[in-house]
Image (cartoon, rainbow, N blue to C red; front, side):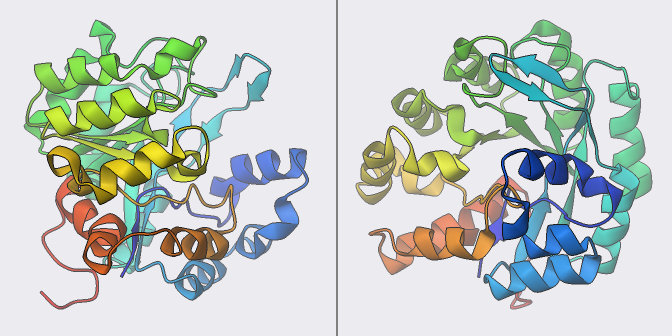
Length: 291
């Protein structure tokens, strides 16, 4: 069983952002479902890779130029993701994309609409792209407070490479400030605060409401630190790591196979692949229907 906390829907216009990104680097041919662009092809591809449930943190915010990287707008429809979630409630989680710059929508109003009208309980933000602030900026406190009150989970883009104007955008200190202010808010750090690997690991040890999902950065600088912290279970860290593939930016089956080949015990692997995600996402059933 696998819950992929970063597995974005590849159908229709919602996936145009990812088609553009993969076309730029010549990798579009690697993702069959992205080329086909249908709901059936999406589920077929991830199920063949062994993914039980996909969390589609697709994003909804203006683009930005960060260092040498130029990113276009992300405009994945929260309504479309919610409809897919209704059709596949044990296979798909709609992650509401929030524009904290309030350009595409009023962020707090969109949270309430998505939560009460669309049944969305997981949300994602990329504040380093728009409006261009750190995750701990006080202008975001009303959002975090509302999500805590609604008992929702927030996924925050925390990449130092592509997350904000400066590298220190990814400093885990920003996330820990949020965790201290809002101790009941479940926080998932997408990209695992790379390259602040050790600091992020220790932060997650200290805080009950923080989980880390490094995705492909697991194999970048700090790879040995991730493995050691998990296998030694420092301060219970094996409970704080989440499996995420960043699909469709990478072929999902190869990612799953590579992850399973890492030296984890069977018990630990089950935590990483799905058990930890049940807590982070507040899922009260096993996706295979056993309870």
